[in-house]
Length: 234
Image (cartoon, rainbow, N blue to C red; front, side, top):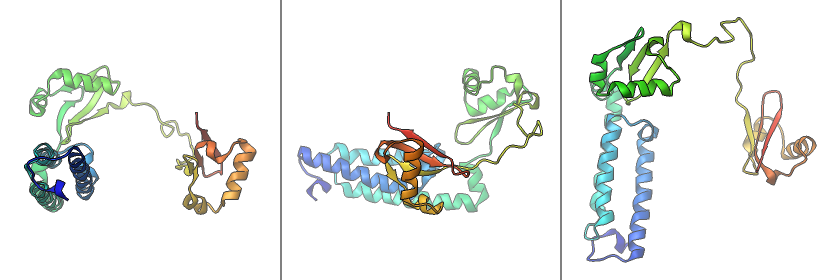
């Protein structure tokens, strides 16, 4: 554990151990903070990312510093982060402070310049986001909102929306997510048992329909009609 404490010098191996130890400590900390910390960064998430990165960088670059201080500080920040997340769920004024409601950039085809100034984005950025959504004309947009995470939500006018089967009164089967039976050549016994089948049945089906071995299969799924779909390694 000498790598953990500040020293006059560290060997290459101790530097590597310190880096690996820090990596898994940050991995655990991020896991505790939850999935939202690794999705689109919001205000709290951004502050945490900057703070933790800055704190852990010092003992990873200065052999005179112990890792203890950095780990205690990060642990305290993670605990504070969790408290603030709970507070944001319980206290609406705080929620509005860290996650303010979206505001309008486009409405009924008209661009709101005040919204652009509030979001602090130039017109070119708005046009770029429109192009990413395959919208060539802002006048086709019924509503565009600047979200708290820095993304833009676009809603087209009704006449520019694509027709759906419901619009045409066409009945189609409801979507059913296929079940994965084989992944990377390995049979998922939990899913296989879930559909009331065994491995012998699966092997027989694959041999009959595809004439391949399990080890040759990258992915195999089955739908509600017991239709087996197989993707081979290429």
